[in-house]
Each structure stands twice: as structure tokens, then as C-alpha cells.
Length: 120
Image (cartoon, rainbow, N blue to C red; front, side):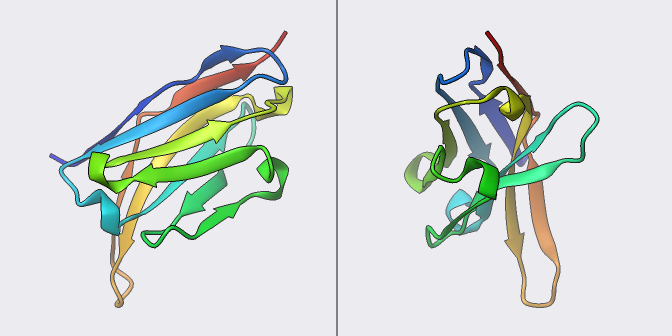
């Protein structure tokens, strides 16, 4: 059974740090593009960061210089290191893994979501 299990998250003060983890099972995680999305109350889900199987990273502008996405393929795990957290980073964070075929078909899996609250 393929699934992604997230850990980390919680309550942190502004300026603090948190690390989210996403452990994959049932898939060859190393060939998947992995990403982190977030959804704040009343807002649409947005892509925060992504990392390809080759290690190419991409970040949304609001987190550039503060968040770091990484992966450990040997452990089938992805990470999101979040530094200098701001109240506007408060959201439910979801990890995602996607493998796309040349014909457009794709396998895509999502984690269960974890709440990150940035507040004093």
C-alpha cells in the first residue's frame, strides 16, 4: 500500500523554526518529484516548495531564503526546514509525491496534513 506519512509541525513563536518530515512507503521515492503545499484558513492550497528526483528545488516567493526543501532517498523521506517563521505561515501543510509519465499519466500521493501555527 502506497502512502506518505507526515510528522513534525505544531505551535511555534514568530521567528522560530520547525522541520516537517514526509516518510514514503510502497513507492520508489527517489524517482518522484516531491513537494510541500499549504492551505491557510479561507485560502486555496498553494505550492510552497518542490524538489525533483534530480535535486532541483523551487520555492514560492514568500518562503525563499527561509524554507529549505530536501530529500533523503535512501530513507524514502522528504523534509521541509522552516526558519524565521511568520504568523502568515500558519497553515495545514501537506507533502506530495508525483511521478509523471511522458504521456501525461501520473502517480500522485499525498500526506495526511499537519498543522503549523505561528503565534506568540
